[in-house]
Length: 287
Image 1 (cartoon, rainbow, N blue to C red):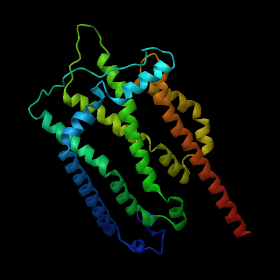
Image 2 (image 1 turned 90 degrees about the vertical axis):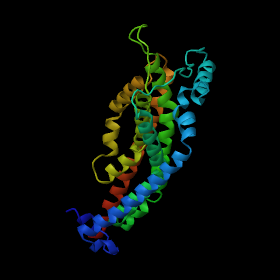
Image 3 (image 1 turned 90 degrees about the horizontal axis):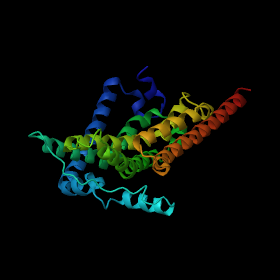
Image 4 (image 1 turned 120 degrees about the horizontal axis):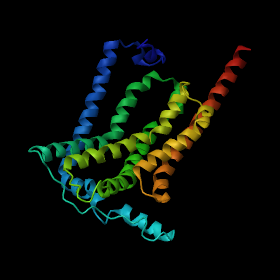
C-alpha cells in the first residue's frame, strides 16, 4: 500500500524502486533541505543585528509602518485617534544565563527556514512528483511558486498586521495598575514567531483545500454550506487577535482570512467541474 502511490507512473524510473530506495531518495532531499536552511541561517547570522533590531523588534518601534497606516486610515474615516497605536517603550530582559544565546540561535534558525522555504518545498515536491500522473502534473504547474507566494504573503500579514495588534493589546492589558508588564526576550520571541509562521501556514489554506478536493474529502458545496460557520470562527479569531472595540482593526484581520476561504471554494468548485468532466468522458468511452 505504501509503495503503490509510487507505481502509478509506469514510465518513471522510480516506479520500480524499493521501499529502501525511496527512503534513500527521501534522505537526499532532507539533507539538501537542511543544508539550504543552514545556509539561510548563516546569512541571517551575518545580518543578525539588522534582523533583531529592525525586524524582530520592529513592531516595538513607534515608526513601524503599520501604526502610521492604521492611524491615517482611522483619521480618513473620521474616527480621530481611535485607531492610532504607538510602539512599546520598554526594554526587554533576559533572566537566564544562556537566554540571549538560545534566542539568537532560534532567530537565525527560523530566519534560515523562512529564507530557504521555496527550496525546501521544491525538494519535497521533487520527491512526490514521480507519484503523480501526467494529467495531474499538468494541473499542478506553478505549485512551487504559489505555495511560496502564499507562504511569504502570510508571513508578511502575520508580521505587519497580526503581530502589532496582538503586541499592543497584551502590553497595555493590565489586571491592575499596580501590576507592570515586564517582558523577557524569550517570551517576546515565543509570542511573535508562532504568529508570523502560523500566518504563513494559514495562507496555505486554498492549496490545502484544493488537494483535499482532489482526493474527494471536501467539495465546493460542502464548503459553501460551512461558510456561515467559517465566517463566525474567522471573526472570533480576529476578535481575539484585535480585541479593541473598533471594527476596522477586526476587519483588517478577518477580511484576508475570508478571502482565502472564498478562494478555497472557487478552487474546490473548479476541481468538482473537472471531476464531472472526466467522469463524462469515461462514460462516453465505455458506451
